[in-house]
Image (cartoon, rainbow, N blue to C red; front, side, top):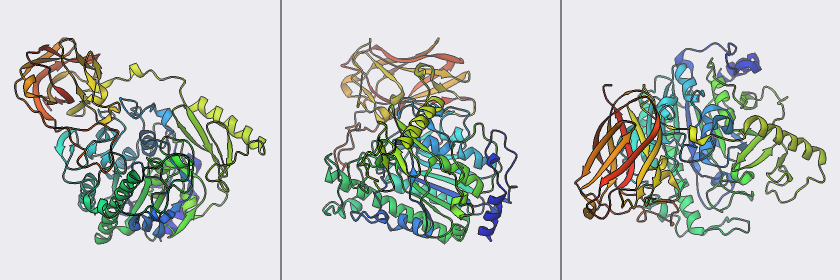
Length: 596
């Protein structure tokens, strides 16, 4: 019956289903007839990191089963790095349109006012939750709770420095994680599924592995560390076998947790009423076997942007179907809205297409399209047959997935057509420049209690140094002079009183320094009298040396209360007195609005 229903619905749909003020589309069904949605997104897992795709270095039976029992897209594309892909998944729009230009320091945020998949489903009566790595903004209105997710547990940054019981947040409140992070996130997801088993829900699980640092529980590492790699990278770049094995162990852990989710759906009798989607956010984070494709994470070539994409909806989607038509992350929102029969309005028209005709096979006159990949000034285009790379070399992907033979001279008409399309897309979608100075970090959104200002978003002055050149999980250190300071360029959104906590460490030799936090005419003075000097952590759990910052167990101290007025300005943290050798290391400021 469900298949007949969706064939009928699809035949009724027109191209205006997604418009700025759409009134077309099917009438909403009763809540009980609307399928649940679970979106599982992994981090830095390449297309080749699955046994289903021929990789004998690992075993992923639970993920493979989603494809075998559901629909798999053979040519599905994401963007080359994390935050652009996530922004496109959430909005259905190309990330340059959204103002995303970086993976840190504010550039990972997409513009407020964009409609997200969570807002669409929440407006239709769905319960919504996100558990994992957000990577699209920390402070409201960029925080997941401000983007339509009722419940958020995880971290908003681009990467995290400790995967075993780390500091996380729950709806803005700092909490302690419980166990290995992917297990912990899955536990939250299972609790959410059970809680709303009788009501429609949208669950977004953006797992943060196999992104480095390469940490995984012993039982997963022990079974791969001595395993001989049967499949290796084909290019000239050097593969690190130990890193590859760590990634394989992390993927097998993901697979175990995917199995926990599918088992829970079976136990609760929700398989026939739940759409389950699995994909990754970009290519592999190391040179390893990836189906012979060129490129890895960060590249706009096939290996950097081709992702697994599987959809399972028992007894509604055809089992074992493989779809060759190209598709992308942009298509997820319009497709889910159709499948879930949601009548909606969007602020902006999505760039993606509704894939329902391909899923059910009603319309074989599917129009050819182009998918654009862009990062770091490089742009490539994928048509159904060809890829034009960032240097305008042309490849027939149907016969040359590895992009080994440039056929631009043999196909001049296709070359010119794709070059014109690239020029047109860049002009329409990619801004000439971005005023990064104007994108301030907001404090005090009127609808939310907490605002986090991590070291990642601050600027160091004087002797102060960032603990690592990759800012996402860094902290500030080497604060030794009253001339040193840390600033955040902020915008206060609502006037009021705010209690401020500082997450710090302090060696005994540096106690009794007095620090001042100021913004406009408001300031706090606080003497740091208590030493807290934990060691750096992370290396004891790393399976391969990391490039990111090591971490410490930072402790909160209440600095006091500030009265802030609406407006812009630099929030400054400095020392007025340093009786010892230095001051403190700084990880985070948390503003808590009073009177709520």
